[in-house]
Amino acid sequence: MSMKISSRQVDGVTIMDCSGRITLGEGSVMLRDGVRELLAKGQKKIVLNLADVNYIDSSGIGELVSAFTTAKNQGGELKLLNLTKKVHDLLQITKLYTVFDVKEDEAAAVKAFK
Image (cartoon, rainbow, N blue to C red; front, top):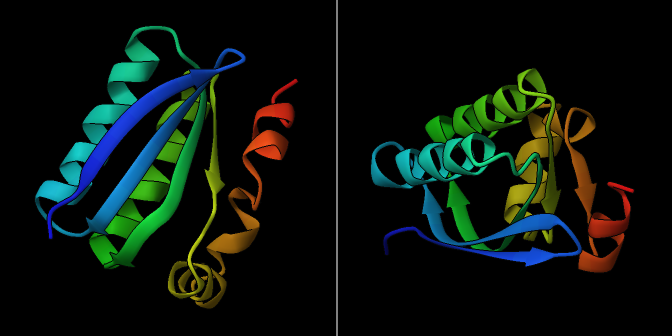
């Protein structure tokens, strides 16, 4: 199953709905390009909705960190939304759960930017 990403705007915040697998190759490249495109357009408030992401490998984790850092360096913010149990556990094990601002609820994620 390949990665799919669609973007939508909610109150000036861009929500990227990701589904599939964030893995070495196509998945991580799509994520990277998607975040960079948004930042290039001046959209600095980004939420990655990972509700439909069922697998992330080490490369995908690296890509999440890279996207987070890139956004921060360009004056933006990146938050994670709706982690599946697998992804949540992975972020706990890698201690990245404390790095990302993780929300369970879309409205809370959008409000967190204000």
